[in-house]
Figure 1 (cartoon, rainbow, N blue to C red):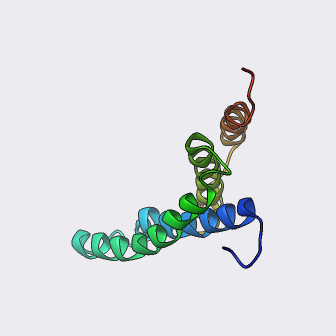
Figure 2: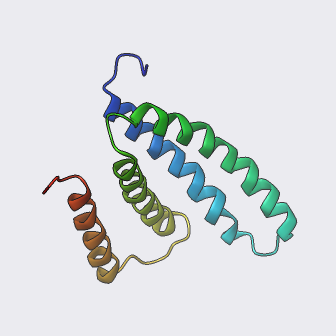
Figure 3: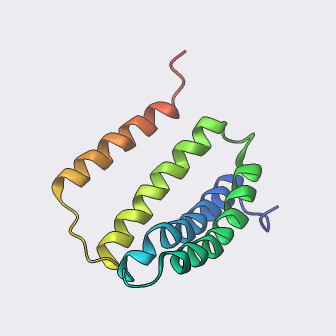
Length: 118
């Protein structure tokens, strides 16, 4: 699976691509406030289909190498990273120091998920 690439590379690569589609589906319409809501919902659902096409195999491939909790943690860190870039580059929103601190704390939480202290 994955053209001979290591499981973590395939899993994380698919999750990054999946999260790009997810972020566009969930937040891309914010620049089109005059578009009819039913239209942006339909377009968002269509875009989200590609998120699932990538996300489901990512989790299937990654599970076993990673626990379900680790997969979810990877997805959340990727999701926040993709969202931060999207909101800054596409929506033109400022990313402040408080966002960096909050993201750092989330990454610290992720670090705990990947360590067995038991």
